[in-house]
Amino acid sequence: FYRSAEWKNIRNFIITRDDGFDLGSRDRPILGKIMIHHLNPLTPEMIEHSDTMLLDPDNLISCSMATHNAIHFGDADLISLPLERRPNDTIPWKQ
Image 1 (cartoon, rainbow, N blue to C red):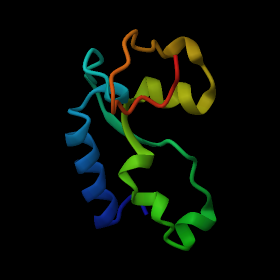
Image 2: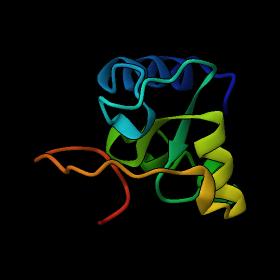
Image 3: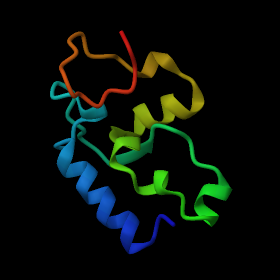
């Protein structure tokens, strides 16, 4: 899935949409590798059946490797949330 043309296209779209910022927050530029995170986790069945959530922009966000690891491995100390929320931001956490 992650090597498909569809994934590469949506990945580029999400990076452009989020301007390469961590969790889409303008005060968090990503200096290293940009990861694309699925806000709702994927299952093997979703991939097998080409579920629409795989490529849904509303289910995807740019993040740094450190943020991605913190999300998946539960180390909240690696994530500093922005102080200000804006309408239509794509940050997956509530303050």
